Length: 303
Image (tube, rainbow, N blue to C red):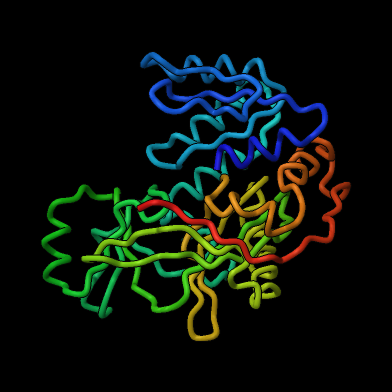
């Protein structure tokens, strides 16, 4: 994901990329300037890098408030943010808050409870996951209420949410958003499996469910209007079932589907991101979405 966006940014005239990286990991060779993180105080280094940049694209998980903290630091230093506001990140960083906001504006969203308040007897199967988790991180499937009760005794209140398990096709939307408007970039089929009650994510097929393009486009617009502080690239996880589409969660950041997006669109998505949030930063009405392709592109992960 990081290398994909660096590749796209490097194709743009006048853009110089700076990228931090953990010194224990491979160097991000595609960045023009690479800053190794060797100590424990990474936040001091990140704040310094933010203060020296013109534009910042944060790539971080919502877990433990990491993305929110970086977003707040970017605002504090007065730099242009290629991402959602702190308000949107706070909402999307909690699956329970996301459910409440989307439900309040009439969007079809999978019912979500604090796991300690969920009654497993009402459904044949249920899914539990961290309220601020990403991907399939620590996401489990329960079919026995007694097993659920045993699991429940070992967790802390407020840390996990529970949802009824819905049979269907896992999918996602890749969007650009700004000030209550949304532009659909791709409709993706997610490769998700369940083994021994644990969910695993192994990638996606970008535009693998493009037959639902019009439905996804309408849903994307509704989500942008319901959470108008969403901005930049936004991923939305959904489940397609019974001729319906239900939202699972919102990701206010780059997602793994971005890796195949340039090829799928036949257009540089980083250019669109800069055009929307920086080059036409005074009004979203100045942004014009070009004609894009809807190619199917596979993205695979090692799990």
